[in-house]
Length: 297
Image (cartoon, rainbow, N blue to C red; front, side, top):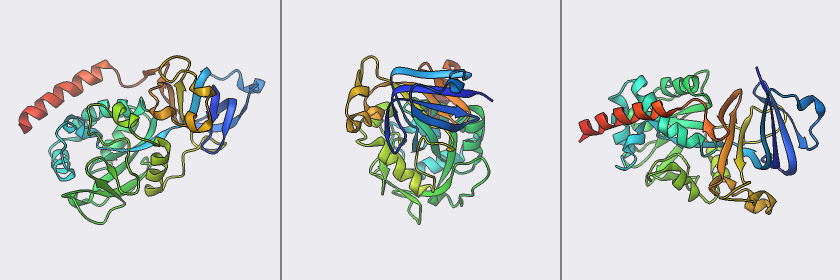
């Protein structure tokens, strides 16, 4: 077990803004949040993250068709994605998911509700990569989502051509009823570009968490750590930390570099590099994607 001290020019807890603040994480939970100076007991933490020119905010939650990442340029309907999932084994779906998970994590997402048919995919991603995962089962699959230990949530999702009673409804392949646009639906060349068009990523994340019956994102004592640290010490978004609260909360879509990402006991991103998804993962995912797309024609 490690303890982590995160400092920043700004810490937004989800409820209030703290200038020159710190967050101390122990055993995957937020132990303390406050203003500097940092108490001496915390200054000897195993891992030190953040620093001046950093904005520390709650991690985001996204609903994502991660395994269908190779199909994102084709605009595959939900029903088409269901058939795609049925034709592939869990190991293949995991490999195909890695580029999508990477983009989500590098956008500040700590909880990913994965579209799929069985819990094995999100549970496998949790074990292999780290972070928090739930399951979103398309209603037209005929599969009833079942919560199992290790999942953040299990819900039903519907969309055009895949109608039925659902917890969340996809609209035009881009977002969901009740959350005007959700980060994780791949309709453009890059999730980051899609994220940059979201007016209020934190608000959208909050709406999705309500649908998934998850508590609101917050950095507060006793809560599981879901923390994103953005570097605004250099362009883009330079000096955003000295702006008003309204402007600071645009950090998710500002283009600022994600420097660190913490999900419970997992430090997923450090110094702007993902610690678990590496170049060979992308090569394997690309090779598999090319084979599948050729087969699909």
